[in-house]
Image (tube, one colour):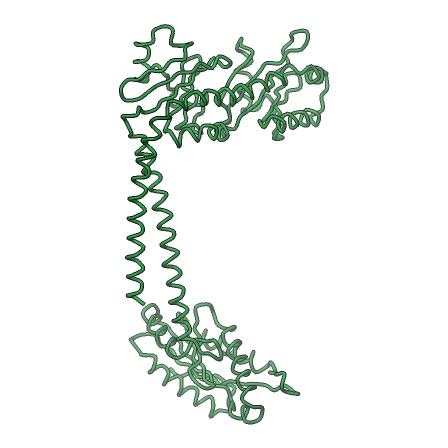
Amino acid sequence: MRKFERYLSALFLFTIITLLLTSYFTFKEVINSYNKNQYQSIIPLFSIVNTEIIRPLNTAFFIANDPLLIELIDQEQVSKNRLLTYLRTMSIRHNVVTFLALEKHDIDIDSNGEILSLSNNKAEWYHRLKAQEYTQFADIGKAEDPHLFFDIKLFNTRDEFLGFAGVAIDLDHFAEAFSEYRERFGFELIFVNEQNEVTLSSNHLMKTESHHRQDEIIHVNDLDWYQQMIKNGGKQLANSIIAYSDGNRVISQMPLPALNWRMFIISPPASEQQEYWALFLTRIGIFLLIIIVLYSIFIGVVDYFKKRLVESSETDFLTKLPNRSYLTWKYEELSCEHDNICVVIADIDHFKEINDQYGHVVGDAALQEVARKLEACLRNEDICGRWGGEEFVMILPDISSEQAIEIIERMRESIANNAFSHSSMSQSFNITISFGLCHKNSGNQSLDNLIQLADTALYQAKSKGRNRTEYVK
């Protein structure tokens, strides 16, 4: 078995090395091919950014200018259920979270069913944005579950301020839209607002908290590559689509006029492949993890079959209990772990008469029934096995003699008080068992010595009329 395992392990290791080398050369070829096409991916990326930002922004404008909605919320009383139904309809149709914050009705409600008062701390954004002169905002909210919010001020036909309407984009979804570019090309995306503050980053997209950040707000002006772009791009930088390389990376800028934002795409040049090697190591790490899992499964299967082989060699065929070999091995293990161990011998009374009167088929069935009941009465840590013939041995670790006697007596009464029947018999009969018990509380006593003591106690139980428990110190 060990030789077989060594051969399999060597073959498995050889396979891993082969796969690693193949992966290395394959990935290197992918890099060479990718370097030719990476710049061609910029234009489709611009298209995706516009789609992901302009579409929800248009939805926000539609809601804010819906005359039926404005007429509804301009009333003195408004039904929250009607508002929620409207928001959920728009949410399902456009696949975004929609919301309304209404001044007159003191309510902040979204399509997920969350309803707040505008005096709630969570609605601090409302008062902050209301005080500003702009009518539309892009804001990051819900620090615990960041969303990109497009907030549009609501006005009635008399130009009276009613509140805010808008949509929220789950940044998980926002990040997913760019996952292909991050994974395939190693691009870093940075979004900057009109105050030149970094609002979103593909590297830390879900950790961004915008105005909620207390520790630090990163300004794009402080980044070294941006300072180099300023020197080379001059005053036309802010509203231009440009590409710039400082020798270590390529930076492309795309204005997002709908939000007064800019997006920067930072990518390594064809001659600099650190980003790609990082990607390669990530892939290899995943690959190795899969190999380790497969190897663990392989070892687990081998161990399972080994265990099955061992169990079959150490299990009594008739009763399915451990046999004498297993009991001897288990006692050695338990003896090292516990000072207090009780060893019990159980012997079925007049078993020969059962075989003679009812036959060996009934006798075997009686042995099986007794084995089940003996095992059922023991604790999880106790061991019960067939010693031979109608004799059973039980090993009870970490237990006093008084506790052991209590368990054995409960076991004896359970068997004696329940009649045994068999399909081949017209009537049932009772089975009784005699028990002999001894206790090891110190020293290195062998199982054979304890069996002899327990056998002496069993002999006393037999001589005193059977169906009883005797203890020898």
